[in-house]
Length: 426
Image (cartoon, rainbow, N blue to C red; front, side, top):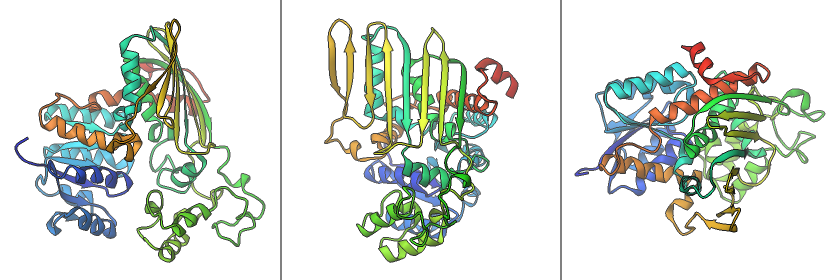
């Protein structure tokens, strides 16, 4: 690559800033030249931090997309239902894209983005960051080596954690599927994508049950206020109180998720913004409708069966667990560990290290996946690879599976055959 890769950012929330951080660490190869967000303060802070000139700052993605092409690549990190409306005009202006997942909440829009990208010979990297993590890459390496034999069963779970559920999916941006996307598409399309990628097989049918059972008015403690504060009689005992935010602010830690609540970096200003904004609402009195627990059964080709469970009610860091069972051995993995346990039936248990804890990537979001995705972008434009690890042509399939799972859930758990589902929505 003879010159720096130029990039523009549409949407300057947590995800946009996460990728911008990685771009900044590769400033010898990447230059951020434009940015857009509907919140002026976000644009100002982003421009100051990453050296974006005033003429490259815009008040919305729409305003930025009215201009002639400003960069080689546009990162689209706006809200889920906005992706299609931003991706199509960006492709038509010949931007390559890094597109935050989900591609879209509508499968027809997903396939249309892929069609336009292929028609105009544009690269689209979808942010299925789990594929880039050392955790997932080591698992795929082991499966592909054949030492486990034929993989016939996978048991998987994702513990969202109680505080993350309350922050993002009860009080936060992804609380309501009518405005954004269902939980299985927003949070768990990573998992559906991983199953497809790790096994190299296609899904044939799905069924699912899941409910919003706890974060609703009838589960509120007696006398709970609609706003969380020390005056609420449940404040001292409620695990979802805003005390967690305030504790971290008192400690001077204003990184995620506090930076979503407020841009402030001092306690008094942070507390003021918290109390005035959506993140101090009582978790039992919000306008949320996404599930807080869900189970999924997936039938893949070649007799592979997969069971997956998502639950809000876990503690600790956000963890994914996998038990992969083959005819010659099984593998147990958890994102919270630094190793995998491989049990080969003729050789016993081996502990396999998969993370170099001194590596730069270990300090970045999604287990290093955010940073490695940006590395993949650079490699793509340096000609070191013909296609990205998460090209849009591969990523659409995970959306098909996720939306079929949601169709099963809302219909009471009925079996949904993927080929019939695709016919119905065309």
